[in-house]
Length: 253
Length: 82
Image (cartoon, each protein chain N blue to C red):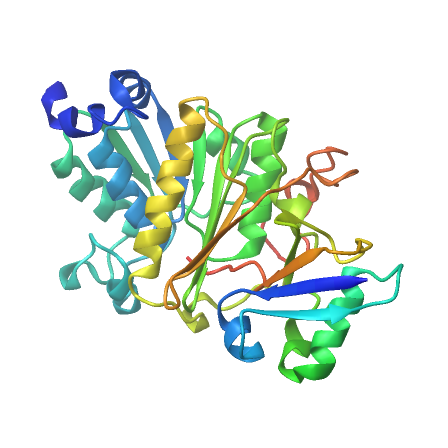
């Protein structure tokens, strides 16, 4: 392994050789490989995460191309997870990258995340995010929410038993929206993936994530909201995992 | 009570300024602020249940009771695209 390829980031004092050593030993699971998930996988591959597993059941669509940095026109119609496995392996052959073309459901998610040190959200709907939240809180695995819409991006690092969870700030179960109908500015997922990745790396290095980070890229407005655990939160306090038991409003089997 | 309301992103465009000051009777909650804003800007009606609010830069639920001098910031609902 050529450690020299990481020389410039090892010089960053917040990260250092210790950060690189930790990253190289880390196993990340990325659920969803659209705008956010694909860009986060590129970043983490280049930064030297030791093992990356990508889960996505979809194929590359022409409407994905404006907001990803790795898919191209020749990839349209091919499975996102398999394309990423192949292309990321060429970026960094020292690490292990595996893509799985499968849908994440309440029945398979705990198996999917079982060996993960951290889970990254690359999904496009709130039902799956609440499912990730349930599975990660139950299995004591940190995860990083990230979402985009129009010009707005949001990220939130979640450490079970330490920080608030996604249900602490959102208890409303939304209806499934059509991801093809969601407006997204092309470079927004790239910025969001960068912020999501750095929050994930900080958690892996034992640092505290920065609450809920909200930004409007068009208006260059960035804010960070401190969070408190919601008393009696159905998920992280009462340990009732509704989305693992029965996906409300969804027919996931 | 004197309450300062800050707006994020497109809400700033909606209000025409980044912050406004209002006076409220004691015992009012963040819900009352949202209702006031919805009366003034009816476009908020559809998403008012989902708006993210911070009170003095810390996340707050809509039922939170306000105190004199509070700074309330309103953010768009949680975003779900990927």
